[in-house]
Length: 114
Length: 112
Image 1 (tube, each protein chain N blue to C red):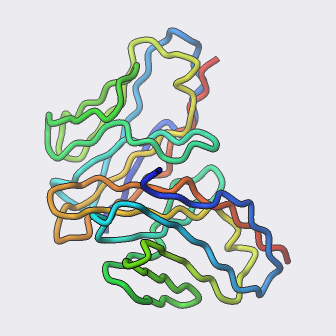
Image 2: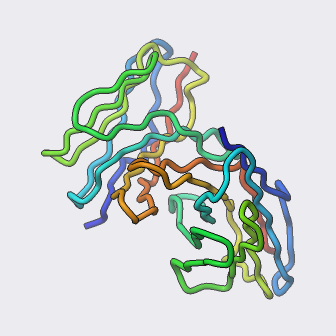
């Protein structure tokens, strides 16, 4: 079964600073990868998803970008953080096989922008 | 109308109670349904997955899907304090559409 690693676990950054969050997946190959943000009372917001290396789909216009330099590595970045970027960032993967495409989540990164 | 509606609670029950958590949806294109459990400050973990209408049981958990009414439920029997968490429903359309649509979650507290 797959295991998802995310780091860092927590991060406090000043407004205007850059951001890089990393997600790596073990135990599966060619996964679909997802970045979500979870804000209090707002549920899970899908930010980006990727079906392969270099293939990124953006779900919402925002201050963030994503890259997939390797099959099992997914990176979330920002050049200049905003206060509104604070939240709990979750990486997820699915195998894309059959009809279920169930997603499995990593432990998350809690980002506070001050 | 939102695609998926879930009562945010909070829901507080005594230990041993039967808990019922529910979601409704509006899009008949949803074909498969999941329940996730999320402890505070942790990532969601998959609890149950169902594809067809009817019931699916796993230990103390039962997932129920009624596609005709566009209504899904999660029942927890003999609830324990360790069940205290936020429960998220999720739905997918299958095929080449990899995305899931999530409810906002219901916060459950089981009191000892």
